[in-house]
Amino acid sequence: MTESTPGRTTVPLRLRVAIALAVGLLCALLVVVGAEHALPVSDFDQCWVAARALLHGHNPYDAIGPGRAFEWRFPFFYPLPAALIAMPFAWFSVSVTRALFISMSATLLAFAIIRRDYHRLLLFLSAGFCVSLLKSQWEPLLTAAALLPALSWVFVAKPTVGAALFVAFPSRTAVLGGVALVAVSLVVMPAWPAHWIQMLHQETHMRTPLITPLGPLLLLALLRWRRPEARLLVALACVPQTLILYMTVPLFLIPGTLGESALLAALSWVAQATTFTMPHQPPHPSFYTDSAWVIVMFLYVPCLIMVLRRRNEGEMPALVAWLLARVSRRRVVAAP
Image (tube, rainbow, N blue to C red; front, top):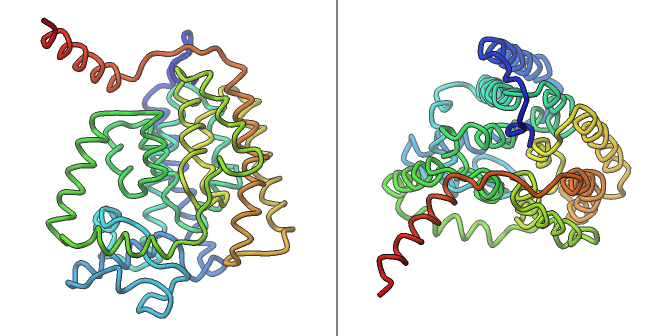
């Protein structure tokens, strides 16, 4: 990735902060101005409701879903740590919460991605980010956390995508912070894992890119396993997810040049236009299957080509090197 490419000039910190704040403010304004035209509920609304339920001593898994207090087409599929992360927003109205969450996520993401390259700002013009903004999705924040290790504990809020990002960008903070957050959640509600697993049994819309017709080709990225973007592509291909465009935001960590970023952003809109023409739309189950192959064809496969054009070189992640060193040391001690 360009983050580690020799010879690049780091963007000055003051400029990074200014650009990030400007992007975050613009996104907040878009959420506020477009509120009356947006969806009646957004994805983060679930976590907001779950946080408020916890504050009132209620089980959030009983409060969210079809025919429940908070009407939603699916049960609450998030682990309880997602509700704990949403707790600071519980004191605001849902409309203010959406603007704050998207603004915070966009600010952190912009700050993270332009450390060395401005071209990644094209991410914010992609269909995937626009859908994330409209639906108040977690992907922008999770993508930012991949490049900001101090924030990587938020991976536990969405374990599938979080695991894929961890494979590409592992850190001790992600492990220690994630374990701490899960521990706190068990203190708050000891039985939540059982409720969560019960909800997951009702899942019917998640797909794995790997099992689409072109999916197995994505394993070719393992030929470039030393590169974090290659590991990211393979990991994302292997985890179950709702294959709608907002899930493609992490893929924008893969382009390494202005041309690649522009191409991926343009293809995201081609994919969006294609999904609009499909015979079935959400929540019809066939939509998620059709959308999966569209996203793999227009976004995952081009990312694979970008990865394969690069050499298999890169530093071993610090956490992996540390673990290997510990294992080697134990073997030496145990040797006769």
